[in-house]
Every structure is written in structure tokens, then in C-alpha cells.
Image 1 (cartoon, helix red, strand yellow):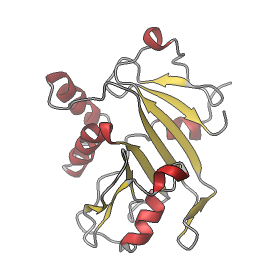
Image 2 (cartoon, helix red, strand yellow; image 1 turned 180 degrees about the vertical axis):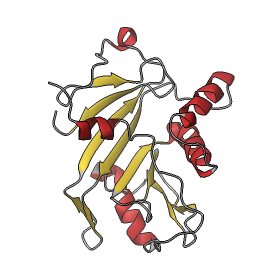
Image 3 (cartoon, one colour; image 1 turned 180 degrees about the horizontal axis):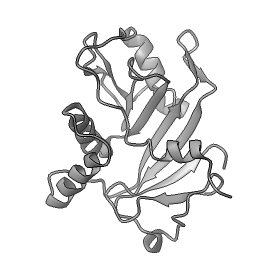
Image 4 (cartoon, helix red, strand yellow; image 1 turned 90 degrees about the vertical axis):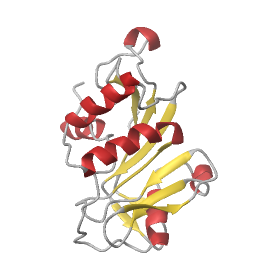
Length: 197
């Protein structure tokens, strides 16, 4: 079965959190609301201890809550047209933070990974040596009163930097029903999962 265009779009969207704008057009919600929205992708037992990054009034990404576990969550960008929250293991933070930094400086599209991959190769960015999870919700509607999202699409990723089909025994063919390996052999090689599986 050929994956739908929307599924492939989600698959390619795991670059995470577009850079905040310098002059925010839409005010950021209160910190408590941002935190509640940010942690929605996580399993319930991980939500309370996750660190949370969110947005200040000027649109700058800031720390809203220190964490007590190994997860970091990003609140939805107030400037985004649709809901998106993401949480990932702290071992991926150097790679993720560098991506945000590059986008904020004006680097776009595939050039972000070109720079990051070169920096991984040079040793400037250290990648985790064990699998690292990423949980995301795209779209839907967030209810601040209940702290829940309805109508969104969930996507789960396990990063295994530099993994290949040979090293994992996984297919690299995109699928909506089976796990598959995306970006094999690269620093952001990862196993793709979806709730339809």
C-alpha cells in the first residue's frame, strides 16, 4: 500500500519546532496552558516530569519548566497555523537545539540537516548511542480546560543514529501499517511508527 501524502508529510515533519519569530504576531498563551499543551504527546506517566520549552511574549523560545525525567517537550508555536506539540528524549537535545538555532538564523529546508550532519561528523554535535524516543501530535484542537487534544494525528519515532536496514533488519520502504526506517545511515536515522499500526 502506498502511504498517503499526509502520512509522508508527517514523516518528514519530525525536524521539530519551527524557529520562533522575532516579532510575535499572536500572543503566547499563559505558561501553564503552554505546559499542558506541550506534554500531551507523552504517555501519562511521563508527563509530570518532562521539561517544557515554550514561548515568551516576544516570541522567543524559553524554558517554562525544569524536568525531573529524561523528556523535553515543546509547546505549540503561537504563530503556527495548526497545533503541533512534540516531546523527545534529552539525549537528542544537542541535535534538536542546533536545528532550532539554525532555523532562527535563517537557514532553511534541507540545509539545516546539511549543517547538522557536518557538525555531527566533526564532533561538534554528539548523538546518542542508544535509542531515543520522540512523541508528536499534529493538528487537532487543544482544550486548555481538560488538557487534551482531539482530532490530531499522533506520530512516534525511535531515533537510532546511523542505523541502516542491514544493522536493524528493518525495511526502508514507507508504510502506514508497519514500522520502517527513515533516513537510514544518517545521524537522524529513526524508526517510524503511527497509531494506525
